[in-house]
Length: 404
Image (tube, rainbow, N blue to C red; front, side, top):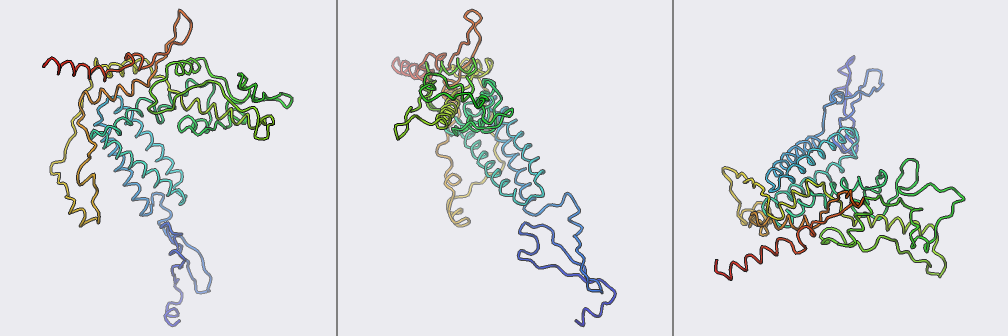
């Protein structure tokens, strides 16, 4: 008290002590209180809180890590052995980072958004590893990159499916298309369900037997002519089920009686019909644009060549041994210590095999003016069914037999 009494007429300050040092556990500025001679306290913020560009140490680390990951992703995209995959993944990476940079700015005052950013950074690190393994020649990783670029899986598949849909889809149907969730509920134009018609209270809903006979359009939207032609062609000539299960039926098959041997409730019929509808959309293979389909056909058949970009190496690249990693980090990373054992030399023949696998699942649709119908041609059908891989193997056997 003697020390406080010696500074009469001057303001005395101290920092409030809280359970987490006054920052709420997120590194925010602390609050100071001003004590006057009369004993009153007045809260006063630090000048740093008035700066809109002020960031916590963790936010600075996230910003630096996101920049490093963006550069790494764009760098790995430039070494992919497919020009279309390079261009599509390059714009996809830039679009995703631009989207989440704006979301981070929107939630800049929300400390609870930090775990969401950490999850996205973890996904970006996995994407860097996937592209790096693909450029090393790992077959599984490179095949996944090609499937993403040509719309067999991922976001581009949904973009190719969207023009075939009869109406604009909601968020839940988007998830069903991309992940096969089995639900198509959403809100669209005031309707409680996507694909469901507005029914008046006096309208009678069809039963399970009537739905099995083809009256399922009372619960979900009917297929568009393009989508119906695609699905019928897929049922007749199923492509290799590399990414999707085989589509076997275009009509729902719902049990007419429940466990008590009573007619199936209407609500249950409605849910089962929507599950069947989402399952059909999940198994569908969207068509490629004709120019892109023709280009991929040329790559798969070997009539079109693709330039391979050599990867630049570091000037002084030194690899740590397994013993050094064990001493420094506790346990060595097998991939860093011994290299990628699944890596393959990326040759034109190696890429031709991968392009053939992808092309076999890619259809193309064209309007036939003579028959006034949509004609669907599948990649496997264009390759002759057996594919160019077996043709190459037959050529090698004939060459070895003749001694050439």
